[in-house]
Length: 340
Image (cartoon, rainbow, N blue to C red; front, side):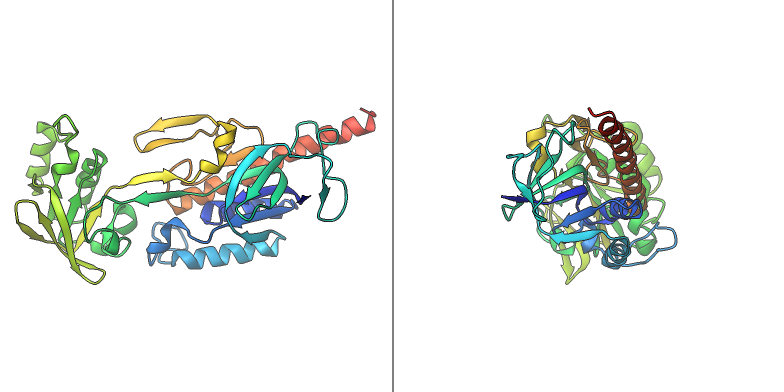
């Protein structure tokens, strides 16, 4: 088997991964980005609340970020990671350049090996995981087909574009109550379908005080379960319920399950944190995981973070990786000089 040695490998080429890669490239680190080419926000036509880039298409940001990172020597490869493990399978293998592969004699704290779906294995001193999440929508006919167009999730990302229109919240969990409260800021014509707020025991997250407050704001509450989201192409036109009623609307906000793309890390048993949105890999203030050579940034660890937030986290992770490698370089140089 042939190995290739990198200072850092970034897994994921969205806003977080590209920000980490840019910071590493500018630090003169040999950096590779592995990306599957399917960023989470590809369904949206524009980004908002991104200072200086408001209204920019998400894929345009990715293209610009990739070009910038490449200008600093960052390399890119299309593909997926199968697994990440400590060390190497055989420390006597060679690199693609024909030189001995680094082993624990020359790098006491070891390397991380990354196996790609192609079967190729790469070696790296550090990993930045920026693979994001998959948004799993409720199985309501007509919902997924209009996702990112007139079926939305974030009032701060999309509220301005649908302000003053007939809005609906199709709740799927208690988080839907948060959406319901917020969206009254963008429209006085709001219908909230509350069936998703009821748990398996029949208890609703909508308490009497909150219900009175919403009704006082003019919010229309509908208890019947939603059976269909109707529309014309990408445009929502109505929400239909199990009791046969139809409610005309112009846009629907809903919740979903967020599944992090981190299964390739399972062999490392990284620490995780339980959140209202599920279990996610834990990171410290510098985006480092419980493994000393693995950092993580973006929605894969912070699913509710917006584009500028994941960009900042990615930049921080890239800088943190370089700082850690600098410390290691100094220690290795000192040990070599002392003949250790």
